[in-house]
Length: 258
Image (cartoon, rainbow, N blue to C red; front, side, top):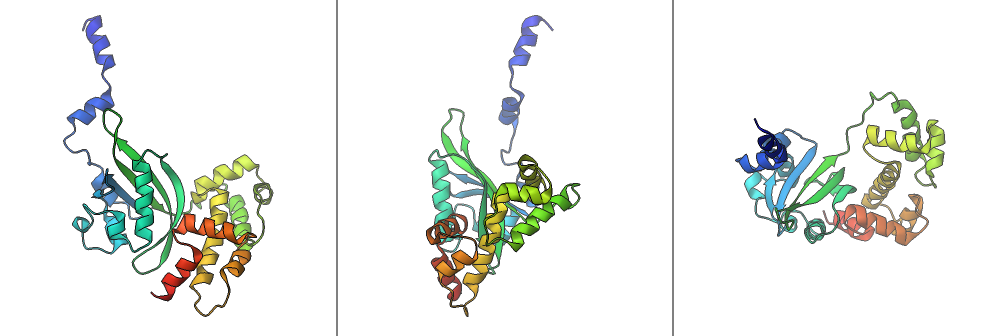
């Protein structure tokens, strides 16, 4: 092989070459079907489902993938959740930053709440134009209890669950775990797949959603906000809406009519 041939071979991008040669761009679909705790999807430029995995089919309560293909989230999920997911998609399709590990509370067909971390990013053609998006939503049920640091980090997590109604500065959580601030952030992600701040939000909103679901309770939204560690009622409403997709009042009303 002469020098010019070698240089030409080195100039070939193996990723691009494989992409051109590949018969099916969605070859990973069967692999994602094997992950029961991960929702996977690809959508076109109008936010319509093009590829979905079996987990999403089950979460939507439909019989098969064909019931989702060609439809937008607004046509699949109960309102106002569907419209919220569609707005999120359109922002990404419009050129907004990718969504990375956004903590979200989802309601499944049986109205059972579940926590997920969601990622969405734009798909682009060879010229850089956005032609769709892809994303995953991963359940937060799995905890790495085999990690050597689990006991230390679990002490900080226990503090969050027992005192979520109080201010919880990161340096105090680090002190409880006998770690530095950098260490506790790193090990929280490894063990719980959440940052300490995300766990605080999750724990507070878990408590708030239970209180809002108690139809026998006379507690106001302001009362619930204070009981869950939010001194500012409006801050609680903003956080709840950003994570759940509904205001606390809308969430309570929805459950009352279920």
